[in-house]
Length: 174
Image (cartoon, rainbow, N blue to C red; front, top):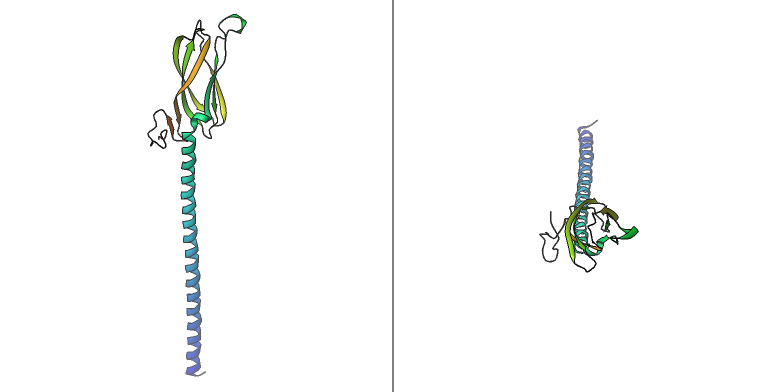
């Protein structure tokens, strides 16, 4: 074999090796770009989902009045229908649990005069549920009124009446 053909063989081998290195480099570069692109897409999706979650929480916080209600059981203070412990019902139609709800109770007589004012709290009211508690009946009470005076949900970042949010989101906290 001549020197010329040996040199050509070495050149061919070097050419093949360099070609393979070049191809591997290009493939690796494409894979890196694809991984970076996937990471960027994941990051954008995560940011979008976080923003959408906050938007939905804001909507629920600002519309809690239409999603949470407190009602009282009608009762009479005399005869067989006397209720020793009238029921208070809390309806939570929010998509989140309520950590605490404070309810002011007004016990009224038949003339509409306030007999007693009381405050009760209920805890851990599940999303889309109804919770019931009973309260003491006071003598001469003919009606019971209930009003929500405190509301907290960590999941919704909701506090009433002590929210620290802006005027556009006044019940925001946590």
